[in-house]
Image 1: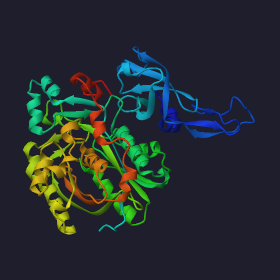
Image 2: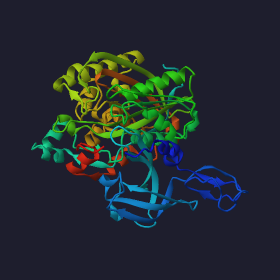
Image 3: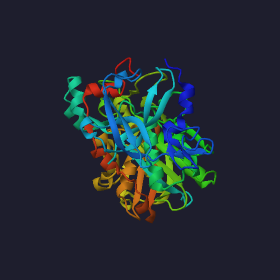
Image 4: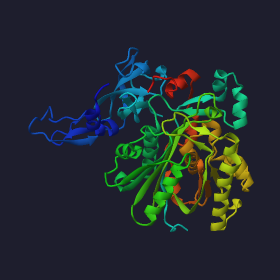
Length: 133
Length: 350
């Protein structure tokens, strides 16, 4: 069993609502959240910023040998989704037949279970992506 | 009148993409599934995916409601989630919904359980809190990934889905004129602590349970507000199958046309706490200003909440972006094996 409770709790803003960061100095946006702006260093000031919940598939792969905890979900699709603000986010693509998934396909964020820690442990929820209407 | 100002200020529903037909379920148990489905008035049912549960369904429906009603999540002062398939036996789903909808922490939240009517009980709680001035907006959700024991009649109908209603004042898309409940201790369906599947009392779930409570609450509400079935454009009743709501509606004087828009169980099955609320959402998708809607839920155990609702001019600007009927049409069929995997009916899956 993974003892993931502190991590699950800490990542709620990112996982539930795609809260990343933006630098008030250079205006660049980041996801996941960063503590220091790589452009501005100590001159930068990072504040939380909600990412757009729609984007396009930049690249994707179908996973047949699942990571630990995801073995029963294979085959599943992982994609790098590029948001309109240029930020790229890694996430699952759900509810789609593989032939509908292409580079450039429009997707939107949906709220799903990510994993559960056994029968008695915590359930981690968060964003995945679904092909947009 | 409640107070002449409280109403629905936003609504949203969610129906999962996957379906299993009654025929496919019947094949596994050497039954004529088509015939069983026809006898229940349900041809197929919605199946939540592997990674969906009543919390994810509640979040999706609530986000749609907030978006359609253009509500500031920080204005939501209460969240009540009705479900009988909570992901946690102890730990509220309401807090997950609050966080995922971007609400401030300045709210009260709780999960309600009253079989299939916990969602409408949440609506009533929100009406009271809004009308008394305690909160500005309340969110009531009915959401379930309904359980049915394999090879039980329930397996042909127990489905997944849900709907959310935002209750508030100021430009409501529909005014809630009045609400009334009828409740008795009638054990027609239950699930004991730690039991995996519910137990039901077969035919006993009909006359002394569903029909008695729905018709009593409905008649008493119409008496109270001085209406008859003919005064309503639409009527929505709890729909555990495709036949009960039609029969109770006809007995109360409604015709099939009034029941049409809100009858979704024949196509998605019984979404338990979500059932009457998904039906109401389907009606709001097509309702026009001035339409009067009658709603009566039913929860085993047993009780009914009836509502008299009038649609206002604000409906046009606040319709849900994705109508319920479109979600029903956007579907993919799965085999019984996939359904058993998705719903964790195979032991060792969690």
